[in-house]
Length: 273
Image (cartoon, rainbow, N blue to C red):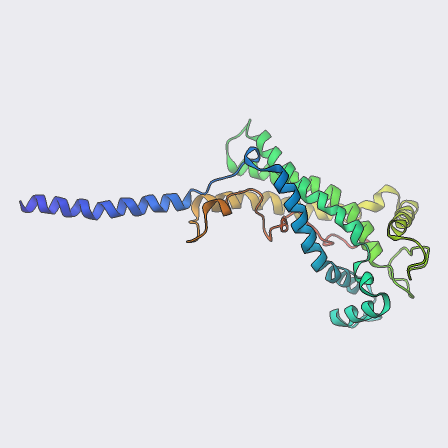
C-alpha cells in the first residue's frame, strides 16, 4: 500500500515536469517563415511605406552629419543644433532635404536585399539543409546585391547634400540658382551625374564601394546564422506570439526597419575626396 502511494506521488511529481518540459520546447520552437509563405504584396507595399516614414524623419540629421563631417574644422557650423538653425534660416525646410528624392531610390536596395536573401536560401537548400550554411551564403549575397545598388545612389545623394548658397563645400557645384528659380531637383541630379562622369568616369559612382562590401557582407553573413541559432535555443518572451519573431524579414534595427546591409552614408564620404 505504501509502495503504491509512493509510486503515485512519483508520477504526480513527474507529470508536471513533463508538462513544463513540453512548454519549454514549445517556447523554443520558433516557426520559421520561408519565402513561399510570405505575402509578397503586403511585404513590398508595407516595407516601402514604413521605410519611407523613417527616412523622412531622420534625413535632415543625415544631411547635417554629412556636412559636419566634410567641413574644414568649424568653418561653417559649430555643432548639430547650429547647423540645423543655419540651414533652416538660409534654405528653409527644403534645405534639410537636399538629395532626398534621389536617396529614396535606395528603398529599392532594401527590397532587393530581402528578395536576394530568401531566394538564395531557397537555392542553397538544394545543396545543404544546414541553416548556418544557408544563412551565411544568403546574407553575404544579399549585401553584395544591395550595396551594388546603394553606393552609386548614396554618392549622388551626398553630393547633392553639399549644395548650399555661398561657399562651395563638396567637389562639385550645381550650375544654376539654388534659390529655386534655376534647376529643378532632378535637373540638379543630372548636373551632378554629368560632373561625376566627366571627372571620374563610372568609377566615380563607386567611391567607397569596396569599403562598404568589407563592412556589410561579413556583418550580414554572420548576423543571420546567429539569428537562426537564437531562434532555435532562446525562449519566446511571455506574451509575445512566436510568429512575431519568426520571419527572416526581421533584422537588426528592423528596416523594414533597417537591414544589416544598409549604409545610410556610412561608406567612405565621396564629397570629402
